[in-house]
Image (cartoon, rainbow, N blue to C red; front, side):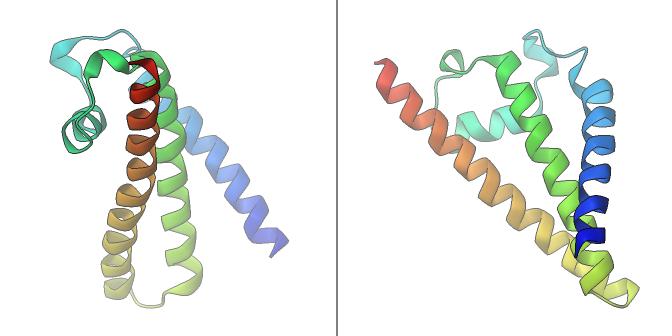
Amino acid sequence: MAKILLEFLVLYVIVFILYFFLFVFKKTKYNKNKIPVEFYYIVNVYKINSKDINYKKFMYITTFINSFILVSTYLIIIYLVKGFVWQIICGIILVSLFIIIFYGLLGRYYQKRGKKNV
């Protein structure tokens, strides 16, 4: 168990750093033509005004969430699922569930925060 936790922490740090430098570092300024899909998802599904969202903070939060989704899915598939086809199927299902859960929580956070600002 300690080995898996250590592996999770090491992989999380590596994926976080890579994700940050590849996708976030240059995109922290709002540019209407280069908005990530996550931003559109939160704004459209949870009916949030895009001006209520601090874009730079949003990018950092999505970096944490996406790194967690990637590493958690990887570790669950590697240690719990045997067989390549089953790993692919479970991976798709897990990624979908994690996206719905974590971005749902983030969307609700922005909804509540938006109501307090009004």
